[in-house]
Length: 110
Image (cartoon, rainbow, N blue to C red; front, side, top):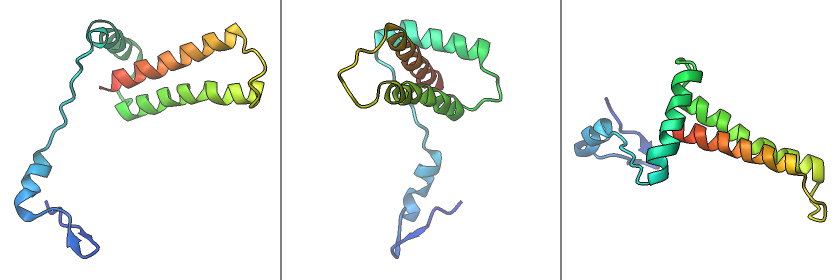
């Protein structure tokens, strides 16, 4: 496998380092106690029970990101850019639920 793509006339990866790039694997770590004992287990349960096996982790993250964008758009459409009006409690609850869905989706990906 050749990784020698020219970039402004220079090679991106020297020949002696190509095997390191191909063999690289990301190993994330979670040091949070809340993630380890609550959110991680809850997210894994949701993924195991309710998410189809054919759904890719990137799709889960994209859908959960859409859940975080929806309340912002609804806030602008419903209340405009004026900060003088009070936002309803039901809208705040919807915002919390959508952000929680984003958080669960982001955790479930990892």
